[in-house]
Length: 139
Image 1 (cartoon, rainbow, N blue to C red):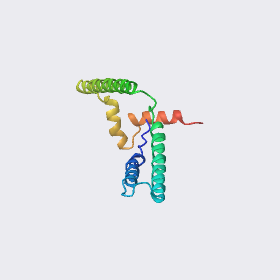
Image 2 (image 1 turned 120 degrees about the horizontal axis):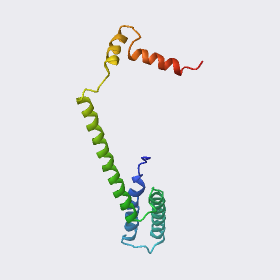
Image 3 (image 1 turned 180 degrees about the vertical axis):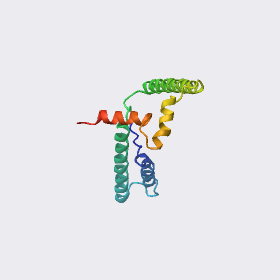
């Protein structure tokens, strides 16, 4: 899943722009003079642009077209899937521990070969490695 961060600054800019509209409308002289009307118009246009930008950002979010119920269904399904995977992982790790307890770790010829390989001999796992590398080398 792509982990793109939501640009919160797009949404955080809405409140200051709305406050600037309110400040213009709350001036003692009101919006009767031309200067205040221009300030109000500029503040409203800035708010509209920011709101449209926030809408387009929210619409571009994956799953944004789904209803809340559909989103909740998908979340519940993913939580069930996560729990199933956790149980599978726990079962698998229990099986790995059980085989180690039964003494089925490393076959003796490979364990001895690892020690021989350190001294430069081509026995055990090192011999297997040579055969594998020769077999996979193109002529």
